[in-house]
Length: 209
Image (cartoon, rainbow, N blue to C red; front, side):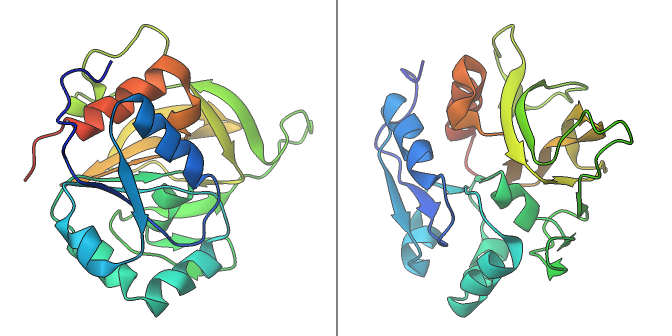
């Protein structure tokens, strides 16, 4: 994989004190692409692709973005942009996690999983779930047969008009979002074997707007 990618493209990961960023950098390296982890506005604006990954807490992450004007920068991005895990949730309008107003790219609310009455389904949701109800999109080009991705999260994005794929834990929720030049994935593609690698490769190969 990755042989058709432009290895000289400028890829940045937005730094905002979130966890699990290093594993995304390693996944990109496996595709032959070196990325720059940065919170410098000009580097982000000059990039060919922007990735917004991480695990963490919504309100403190939003505070970091606002302190550095990165919230406005993200809203103005024109190049292909990918949110991952917390990155997906922060692209929505509001998160129940500490009642946080988010970036509003996607008109979707983020809610906390409520365990089922049986108590068999725990929160956080940790494990492998299959992508379902995929909408035709270049992000899904030539996917491998297995559609399972790895999840670690307590909050989820509701279903909406920008939902590209769904998955189910306790109930259906949004697995992948797309609007204009923004894509977002709730699962961790960097931990999702060949499917995750292919999704990252397809994102990097998207045409520039």
